Length: 260
Image (tube, rainbow, N blue to C red):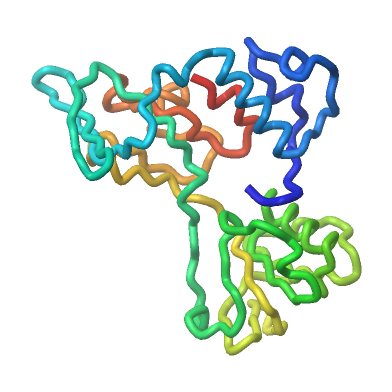
């Protein structure tokens, strides 16, 4: 998450059924709170539930396998360099899918003279003050990061689209162009033959579902979509309903949908 990030969905659609915003803060709050307020709310819900008492912290899941003979899962974890295995009847994968960036490559990236980063690594728009920035992508992150950069003094924002432009009435120093084709030096070239000198390229190109700790038969393989095909009711793995995935949907009010 980055500085100055605010919720792009109303809190009324994000509220947990068993713990309201007004219960947590003791008074009504605006519908679109900043990230610090949402984080405080989530921490309050965790404290109320007592779920921390059931969590092993600082353990990394290395492997999850399933044995058909006894219908049991073996989960191998590591802690301070020591691996251990435990057996379970069910496995619920709640690691999310917004942590492994989808990073496409265009010719010339390896020799680009500025900075290339994914939206995942964007932290502060002030870094790009007085710079020319190219943003690749047209979804929420592209819109918000472009607006943040404008607000905090970017020289220009060039937005490169793949399927369709955003269509908003942006300020004069916003330029909308077709998809990037390649980079040469500090110039970016686009499908319409035009080019633009840029200081930085920010890839707002989404995320990959990535679960390297799950064995092949348990691994969820899907693109970003509202309803992953492999999951019954959006949760249960089709070929093994004892394995469940929480929070695999895209483009949704995530708090309550991702609640287990």
